[in-house]
Amino acid sequence: MTAPQTLTIPALTAKIEAIFQRARFSAAQAAAIAPVIAAGERDACKSHGVYRIEGCLRSLKIGKVNPGAVPEVIASEGSIVRVDAKGGFSPLAFELGLPLLVERARTQGLAALVINDCFHFSALWVEVERLAAEGLAAMAMCPSYATVAPHGGSAPLLGTNPFAFGWPRPDGAPYVFDFATSVAARGEVELHRRAGTPLPEGWAVDAEGQPTTDPQAALDGAMLTFGGHKGSAIATMIELLAGAMIGDLNSVEALDWLGTTAVAPKHGELILAFDPARFAGGRRDPLAAAELILSGIEGQGARLPSGRRRAARVISEAEGITLSAAEIEGLERLARD
Ligand code: NDP
Ligand code: PYC
Image 1 (cartoon, rainbow, N blue to C red):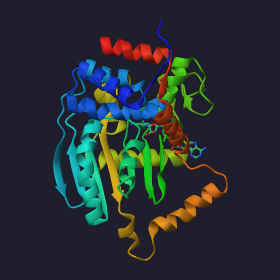
Image 2 (image 1 turned 180 degrees about the vertical axis):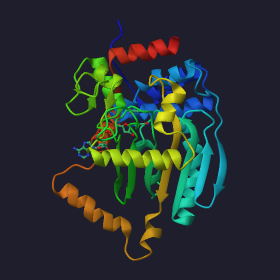
Image 3 (image 1 turned 90 degrees about the horizontal axis):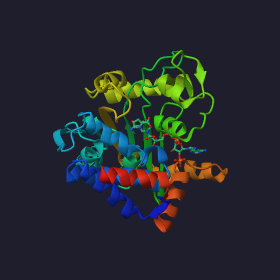
Image 4 (image 1 turned 135 degrees about the vertical axis):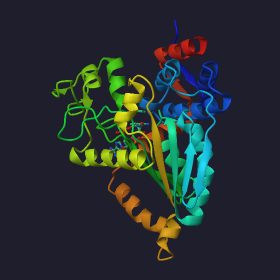
């Protein structure tokens, strides 16, 4: 019988990469996807860890994702860098666009990376952390597929539409938050379904629009936005900026095109990068000024977002990542099939 196992981060990354290669993803696609999934496990972000692999592979089985996609920079003038992911997963397109985005943000003060035609399964903190490591503030957002009711409505229209923000700190880990604009990521609902545990109240309504704590009824019905009308407005903004504005699919169109939520959604993504020093215009040191706020929050004993993730990362780096027997069995099956 399979037992739980503890793997180093490189060992887990290599296992995931091998699964994607065996499934006929190109070496470049597999090498870009695997670290993102491993990072989800490393940082105890289970809703975007190894559980995502099956959905990614189903995207291939139904003939939707392009496993050999070679993303291309199709426009790179001024402050907008546009990468066509060519129907592949987003991480390789992000890797291609990142150096250009950084360079443009430094020369122009503000720059945007538009990724079109990508399948998207990942958490967004992975991306804004990379920009914060370059000394840039960043925002990332994308639609998803229609699984969330607008505030006051009861049927799926919006996606779980994540929004992430990163800010570089002079002496440590960046300030990063990253959340779905639904009460929780859909992945969390799926994990509750698998575990047979009820959802907290207020996450979802069933297909009749009635409140439910049953994960399956929630998956068949609609999730709710966080903060009522406020989350609903932010989710709508993401449909506009990272869907309509960048010439890509909104969450309804993404679901229509896919016909199922059992695979990764396909749409575009918008990533904005800001050079804080350029915006401050020499008036004051923006990073030092930011510390007054951030240390003030911590000074009250409140935790900063990403603190839990980073604590998990420290443990994973020192002790490895422990996966349950079921997770190991799943990885072994995927490596064989
Ligand atoms: P959570 O609600 O778990 O966390 C949201 C953020 O709030 C995190 O930055 C978290 O930091 C922080 N946070 C949580 N509790 C506190 C607290 N008490 N004090 C301060 N900060 C806190 O995230 P979601 O379920 O909404 O989303 C999970 C992931 O799903 C995200 O990474 C998102 O990108 C991804 N996602 C991706 C989608 C896609 O289409 N690609 C769609 C939807 C979601 P910490 O992690 O340290 O707890
Ligand atoms: O958890 O809502 C989610 C999600 C959708 C696509 C990737 N993650």
